[in-house]
Image (cartoon, rainbow, N blue to C red):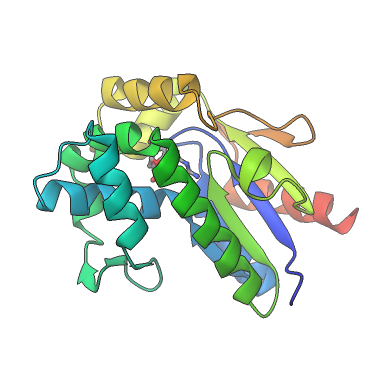
Length: 207
Ligand code: DC
């Protein structure tokens, strides 16, 4: 079995995770995984099938049966939901579905399997990557930014919607959003992307 090296990048919505993780993965020639897109894909499928996000048992069955790909497009059971997963309905329901422990167990298992299959290392971004999914990650990074900056970056999602999502994500019983004690904390407010990348690469070089 290949032992893949993992950089875990966690943080709230709009903290810069996706942008930073993608560029970093490119720079390292490692694979990149957006785990939020997986929870969003399950949410899009539940909404398509008329399943109530609060119906934990039905959503769990759906998640367990679903085939998800995130690159180059987000596909669930072969259906392209790349655009759909960024719509307000999904923004609204995704935190409820991501709080479902059975959905989380199914996603975490896939994330670990995926990482094992990658030829080089992986850069994985989400909310519980350093704390739960890859506790042995070679480097854990926790990104933050001011609420104003995060709302500005999310553009079409309102500050209130982002705040609601962060509140649910941080207060849920299972794998809440939090920085692992060994994570490097980086505040990306008013910071150039390249500066953040350099900070992370410098930390990685010390490992
Ligand atoms: O990163 P994002 O905004 O695309 O994430 C969508 C939602 O999924 C977010 O509300 C939190 C949840 N999520 C999670 O609970 N665990 C992850 N590893 C990734 C995302």
